[in-house]
Structure formats: structure tokens, C-alpha cells
Length: 205
Ligand SMILES: CC(C)(COP(=O)(O)OP(=O)(O)OC[C@H]1O[C@@H](n2cnc3c(N)ncnc32)[C@H](O)[C@@H]1OP(=O)(O)O)[C@@H](O)C(=O)NCCC(=O)NCCS
Image (tube, rainbow, N blue to C red; front, side):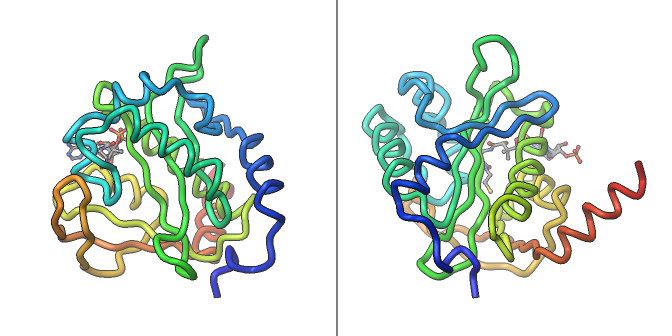
């Protein structure tokens, strides 16, 4: 059974705990998305190249979509976590979003992320994903984390592979931006596998 469905604190308590969560990596700060300015979010999110690779992101992406996103963060934080991704420089420049949560009630949580196009290719998604995967298994109660990428999305597939996800097979997912089903590769990372990978990384140090 998905551990995220077991007994949990009340919604308000959980939302407050999530809002206080901050993760620092070498170059990034991951924190509650509620602090992100709506215009800044829209400027990076309103991009077909981003939306077409995500299941639920609308395109075009307008200010109301940003407000709906923040409302979802406040109301619906049981069984998942969302973080805004910022460069760890003065002003903490916002560059994207990452998180995990069940796509359907009772399902294992699935990781999702996007980085604004001007920031692609610098290793930021890989850095953020590794930190969130560690968080899910070490600070949260996740037992299996799912992942998925359109078959055309080589960069996202690499992000998942570098985090230790294993290929599970081929499927289809509805893309809101494209308004049609698209073929996807499905991945999973279990807690024992994650622990093994962490152990091997430590042994190499
Ligand atoms: C996928 C995405 C998150 C990658 O972000 P990023 O910060 O550029 O990723 P990274 O720099 O960490 O690169 C990850 C890997 O992909 C590779 N990569 C990057 N762009 C690539 C491309 N166009 N083609 C092939 N490989 C690519 C990188 O070389 C790296 O692999 P390596 O470490 O083995 O060299 C970003 O492109 C994005 O937000 N796309 C739109 C939304 C999306 O696809 N989200 C994921 C949904 S499953």
C-alpha cells in the first residue's frame, strides 16, 4: 500500500509543515511555491515547449492558471510535496517547479518537474530531482516513486535515470496542452533501490 495514504496530520498542519520545508543543494534552493510572484511564474510557464511535455500544464498559461496553481498548493498538500526551484543567489531567482504526488487517489506518488527554457542544459533539473527524491524517501514516507517522460523527451528520461529510476514500460498519458494522448515511458524507484544507491554513493566517497 502507498505509505502516503496512511494516517497523516490534519490538512492545515500538513500545509504549514510543507510551507516551512526548504531544501538546499549545491546551486539551488527549493521552497514552498507560495512565495513566487505570479508574473514571474507566467513568464516562464507560458511556453509550449514546457507545457507539451507535461500532463496537466495548460497552454497558453495565464495569470489565472498561476493563481489556480497556488490555490492547489494551499488546499491539496496531503500525499505530496511541491517546490519552486530557485538559484541560490541573492534574490533567489525563480527558475522552475518540482514536486511529487499521486496522479490518482491511492496511487503511488509520481515526480514531475519543469525548468524555464532559458535555464535548460545547466544540470538544474538533475540537481533538483536528486534532492527531491532523497527528500521523498528520507523525510517523507514514500515507498515507491513513479516517473514518466514522453518518448521524445530525452532530457527528462536522463534526469530520471540519473536519479536511479528503472524503466517499467510504455504507456499513454493525456496531455492537457496538446489535448490528446501521448506515448510515454514509465519509470519507478523503490525505497530499497534508493537506499542501495545512496549506500553505494557513500561508499565511493
Ligand atoms: C526536462 C527538463 C526538466 C530538463 O531540465 P534541464 O535542467 O535542462 O536538465 P539537465 O540540465 O539536468 O539535463 C538532464 C540530462 O538531459 C540531457 N539533455 C538536456 N537536454 C537534452 C536534449 N535536448 N536532448 C538530449 N539530452 C538532453 C543532459 O545532457 C543531461 O544528461 P547528462 O547529465 O547525462 O549529460 C527541461 O528540459 C524541461 O523543463 N522541459 C519541459 C518540461 C519537462 O519536460 N518536464 C519533465 C516532464 S517528464
